[in-house]
Image 1 (cartoon, rainbow, N blue to C red):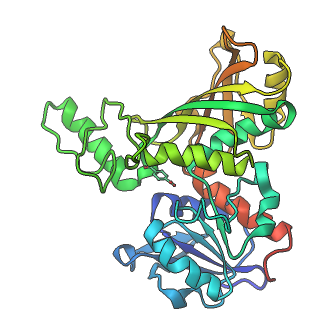
Image 2 (image 1 turned 90 degrees about the vertical axis):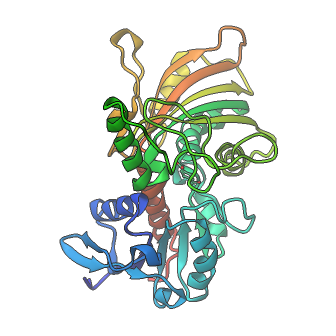
Image 3 (image 1 turned 180 degrees about the vertical axis):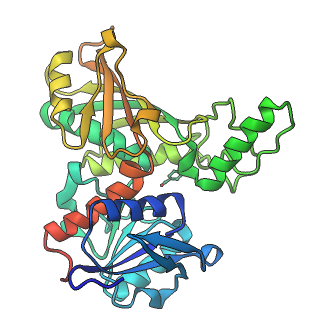
Length: 350
Ligand code: L14
């Protein structure tokens, strides 16, 4: 479909869980698209995808796919990004990469527009979209950090299966049926496709997301730790994370403990701050049992926060609960927001 005005946009990984949400977000925001190219790895090439009522055939991505592309949204896995992002940049595209391939590269801004939009100005062709669990946490931390400063963050996550892709969601559903029917199950994907062992996710809680590192933390945990410091521009911030997979289809939840640097804000102060924070929706009314839940977050771009309370032993410490749709604000929606910021900042060739 060709429009008179707008940009030439490529979506790489168009058939995947995140790619599909990228298309839904572009459609819903009526993003100015002149030409749309839908790309994938070899495995998914040839599949049909509909965008704004027009059917597209997804093409296998190669270096030349990015000829004349102005903005390329990548979500087809880290190794494809490593291979093709530099090729897209060589051909003049700006790449918004949703994998972990470039996030910690010092020449690549790592951006959550509500938090560090200005970092986009430093880009050299690639802008990284942070990890899903990191994004929703920093959106909630930023208003507090801005006013009171932060010394320490400890987070435990309760992560949904869709982050690992459609095949993992299918595995969870089939396993659930099989277990209820008393059949044996043979997990093949979770906790991590490429790891040695696989465990059932149905009726379970798995304290492993991505592979283990030498320090005993998983890669997902280290992503949260390192990315949070980079996005908040605070190398010395103390951060620890424990990432756990639950049999939830979509919507990550997080229990967050913080120690603020200056002052001793009351819970009401924090609620007001969070209520007016960009991209945040406060849902915090214990007497009416109102708090954020994964199921309620599905399909919505907001980061929901609630259960805000003081630590009982430390003056400057607080606990809260953060929930968001991991495929939207955690991935696709944030990527499209970065593309919108590029336009707003006048950084896309028209
Ligand atoms: O973008 O849920 O770093 O398994 C990698 C693993 C996103 C989610 C990333 C998962 C992720 C993911």
